[in-house]
Image (tube, rainbow, N blue to C red; front, side, top):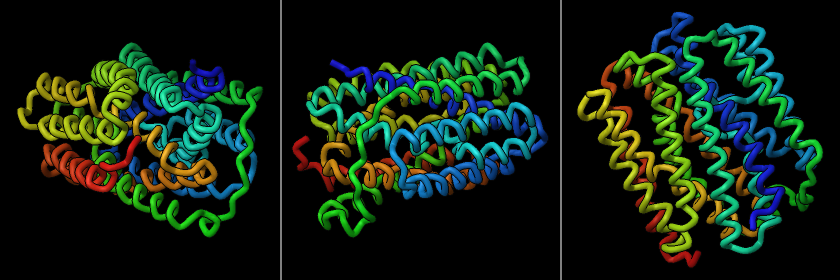
Amino acid sequence: MVKPEDLLLSVTKSIRSFIFTSLSISIPFFLLSLGLDAIQVSLVLLLAIGISTFFIFFYTILRIPIKAKLVVMALLLTGAMAVLYEFPTLLGLLIALVIGAISLSGKDMATNQSLEQYTIGRITRDQRQKNLAFSIYNFFSYGSGTAASAFLFLAGAKSFQDIFFLLLILAAAQVVIYMPMSFPLQREIKPSVDILPETRKRINTLGSLFFVDSLGGGLVNTSIIALWFEVVFHITLSQAGLIFIGVNLITAASILLSSYVSSSIGLVRSMVYTHIISNIFLFLIPVFHVLAWSEILLFIRQTTSQMDVPARDSFVNTVIPEDSRVVGNSTFLAVRNVGQVPGPGIAGVLLEFFPPAVFMAAALTKISYDLSFYAKFRNERV
């Protein structure tokens, strides 16, 4: 039975997912409409991830209660969307990126996530219930991503300012949800010297592996995929929204199956097997250079591409001791953001000179992560 707190946190996660998905798909088109080229757009995306990464480190060391931290971050995101709505220019976007620490990767890389995951891990003890809670948490996210894509499909002809206004309202709604909620007290732990050496070693090992995965993921985040389809096939924002409706619908369905798969074959095998399959199809996306085939292969890739996420969340919140989970989750979140930073810049250059290499390089990098992770943790009994 899923607890009410888990459901509310899934709702806040879904709000952020709607906002970040909408921004990650629309911002490349917004920047192109301002006269920027593909490399310049990719540099803005790189800057966004760099800013987001800096703030993740800052928020991690900020010693205030979980609830206060979540409310502050929600307020800052609301302020960022207000700036973008009032000033829909390149400067307005850059200011909003700084205020809201928005990564434009298409994924929820906000520090909220590590705190919400910690809360779910604290209040949900049974392993099967925990697997289900994290599956629902991620399902809400991708379901919301589908809604965001549908919104962009329908609103493609509207002004970008209209899009930003809806995102402003949703950002404010997140604050309203957090305010009456209760959160577990985060046990006071000093920096890494108070973490057991064995735990610190495990966090470092996982962090290095997640870095490699994110390095590949940074080449094919939502913004880059949208930009790739525009550069190669000259699609519109409405067409991009339609593509990502399919992407997010398929992903949301696969997320629901993740709990069953991980309970059947274990967390490690769920993470590795499904991820390798998705990366094979990722490699094939640009091969035929036909829009329909690229879309089909992207959809097939999505059937398993995020199935590892709930399993990974459950794995991390199981093998890392409770007192170290916030540090661990925050570290992994920061590492994943750092890993993504070079991706947009590299992708921009590849888009300019050899577009198929974007997907191929990403796939090979991510497969190397899969094989390394399995070699290291295949004997874990979870």
